[in-house]
Every structure is written in structure tokens, then in C-alpha cells.
Amino acid sequence: MKKIIILIICFLLAGCSAAESEQSQSDEAGSQTTSGRSLSDSQETNEREKDREETVIKARIDDQTFEIVLNDSQAAEEFKELLPLTVEMEHVNGNEVYAPLGEQFTANNQQAGQIHAGDLKLWSGDGLVLFYKDFSSNYSYTDLGRMTDSKGLADALEQSSTVRFERE
Image (cartoon, rainbow, N blue to C red):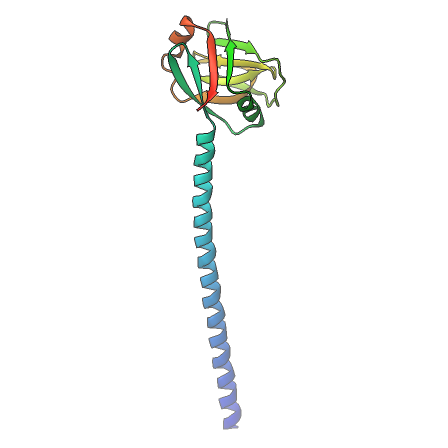
């Protein structure tokens, strides 16, 4: 009888030891996964920063240069493929300049709501619009991007409505 009890105790201890070992291995695997995720998150952050760097373009008006950060959309990619591009833009409504691009882009029109100076948008799928004043609008546009700093944009467009868009 003592032998059976000793055997049962040995099996129980062996089972506890195996379960503890499995838990330890599982914890280590979880740590590696967590570390892997951290590394992956870090890599994703670096890739997003790299993408952001790749989506910065310049708009040159006379002797002034403005940075535009393009958004992550098909239309913005299609626009970027046209660069460098020089367009003669027409003043419209006292708050924007417009130029037909003669090419249909992938549109994702959304009601604008609030428009800000420095917004770059598509109107009707083939018209490039650069806004130089803030205002509310019920029109629908496809967003392309936004200037990082639009200070001086309206003054520059008073001097010339020829805009050269180019990659940074």
C-alpha cells in the first residue's frame, strides 16, 4: 500500500513539474511574441515614417516653396506619378486656384465640411484645387493632401498662379 501511495505522489509531482515547465515555456514564447510585436511595431513605425517622407512633395510658386504631405490614397499616388508638373491655375471664388489635369483620377469624393488654406484636393475626378483660405463648403472633393505651413500662400498666388509640383 505504501508503494502505491509513493507511486501516486511521484506521478503527481512529475505532473506538476511538467505543467510548470509547459507554463514556463509558454511564458517565454509569449515574451518572444511580445518582443516580436514590439520589434514589428517599431518596424511599422519606421515604415510609416519612411512612407511619410516619400509622400512629401513641394509646390513652388514664384520664389516661394511650400511642402505638401500627400495622404495615403490611390488618387494621391496617381497625382504623385505625374510629378514634376507645372500648371497654370485659375483663381476661383476668391479662395482657391483650380486647374484641369486632363486625366481622370481614382475619386473618393467626400463632403468637405471645413476647408483649410493649403488643402490640395481633386474636384470632379480630374480638377486640381489648391485652397488658400479657410472656409466651410458643402462641395465634395477627393483629398490629396495638405500643406505643412500655408503662411504666405495667398500672397504668393496673388503674384503668380503658375504652380510647379515636384517630388522633394
